[in-house]
Length: 209
Image (cartoon, rainbow, N blue to C red):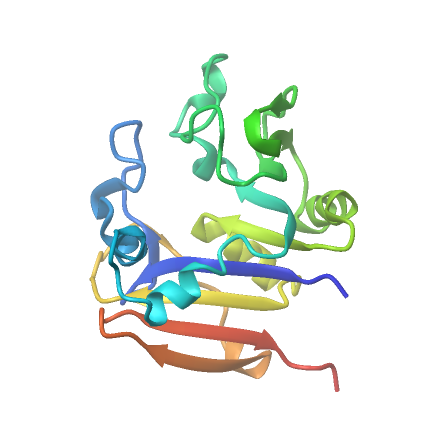
């Protein structure tokens, strides 16, 4: 049965998935690239084939659609720029139908490599229904940012959640865990530590009793 999953979502020790303020020059705010350096390191020639690399390779395996928040697609105000086509150039890394949650939907953007961005004003449940129809027998990825992941987890829609806890403290930004008290009652949680200092949390929804 297809699943709803979050993969390789990085947060700081204090639970922030990005810093602030986000802008065209600083997509992750004051956090810069600190939350993602562990993944970049696994892409280098001769990088060790360790824990980080094993988790990193699962980022895009088995997915037929993605859902992301407006702030992942672009900086504040991108809706006012008719030429904005996302951060990733003409061949984004998603290669699937990708649903962007925004209060200002507009026509879809068909990109190279199989990615088509659909801009929708929808609740998590409504967005997931669209994405699951597009994904068919494959899984749906909830791609972020933190508020989007949090909304789907709070709505009980996520089956598996992989969070990479990075050893930095941001103190401000967009926090993942707010309002998700007692998450351990809903998910079985395993932790694997990497020599890089990153702790990989794998959370799998418990079977309904």
